[in-house]
Length: 123
Image (tube, rainbow, N blue to C red; front, side, top):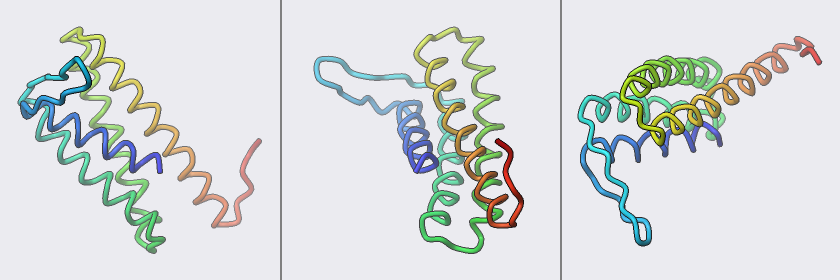
């Protein structure tokens, strides 16, 4: 489920960066930034495919979900470096939250892979 949430947030971030404004009550979120729109859309699709393979319990999930997670981690780390230079607190917080979700997903995936191989997990 974490990968599904990550994919959804990346899709929303991409829409915002493409210039779509999202009204939330009395406020509107708007953050056009063309340089991030396409990479976030690509990462969203890759993570969504990884999440779908897990939810559908497909055999390809064994390699595709971890690969999608690593791809998203790399893209998000790069995005964080860009965001830090821009200095916008909301964007920095989003990237840190997304990194937390992706790291948690990677740990859970690693644990699941280890348990399927019969390798005892530590702890």
